[in-house]
Length: 475
Image (cartoon, rainbow, N blue to C red; front, side, top):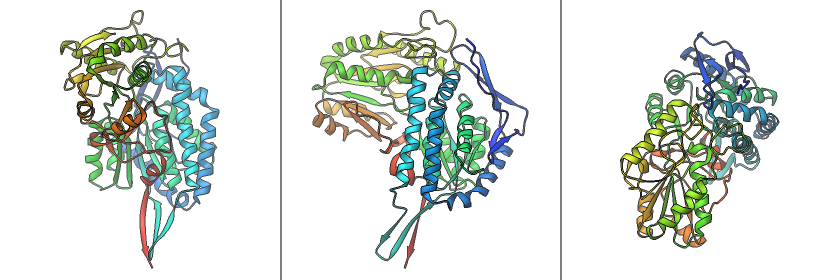
């Protein structure tokens, strides 16, 4: 299979393609085939300096643009992404292996919804308010540095760019070197939408060069990062030298608590989907399914039947529900956790080590389910970021809550049961987002983590406020 993609010839700085300051490039490989589909520049600190200078120069004009006009530009960006949805979906599938059906829906649909939501929010947001004798004014923070991962390459940047644009900020963006192709498409869309040159800039490169330069840059006022907890710690440490604001959306190890009064077949089907979607490469996944110990055998039978419906294969095949892992080194990491689970004595009930049958080439793993898992084991505590579900039995509700809250993470969780009962348990979970009975995603609701899943929030009013400074004027 040959995939045609566009190779960016340079960075996007001040509204145009700018040659990189080095001849070094980074190859982008299709994880399903190993085929090289593109090359991007290996950016340098000097490239970041040029991008920051452009963003700083563009800031006064964009900050002075009325919010309604900024919202109109953002709506045009959303429309432009919608018009290029097939191109975007194909690029995401080629660079990180998301099944094409998911690339068309979630990978493109979610960012378009996010752009529209922030445009709407701008029209009703309280930019100023009177509090006694004080005028409270919300102003743009300045130049934002954005660094994003590879699992949802377009959504992750739009989730940062949309509120930053509405706030009146400018941006320097580093996409993941694993999945950088949609960054150029987005840049072109912003220009076609009438975004002034310099407001949005893209510098390709690695985290330890370009990411470090962005995090340390004295003329960047805020860092917004989505990625691993390890990388988030490093960014926080570097950014602290210039005391810039840091917003982090980091790792997760979501728990899905199935209560004894749940509709069990529906609950288990939902739980398997939330563990396997995008090949489990979702920070908000629920890889831990907590079930009444007395019903664990029944849950295992339902989970195995549901997992059997998740076809693994060519991500361009419409029937595929799980494609390859995003790159070979990540496949090896996921495989090592599956082997660790077996070695540690968890009961393997589906999948297991090794490649799926007939898929000897590509970054594929077998979707796997373990039962009777020790909640303190590595596969129950550490973020695997692959299609690995652990089923854990609990004796009573208090133990379920203790297990659910018993990791260093706190990003997402789910509860399934009688509605009021499930809501009561949801209130006890230490996570930034808890879905009750499969509650639908809401782009106006804040999203973010407790504990080492990060700080700050994305989406909705809270997401916009991350990109604003608050000034108090006494009169």
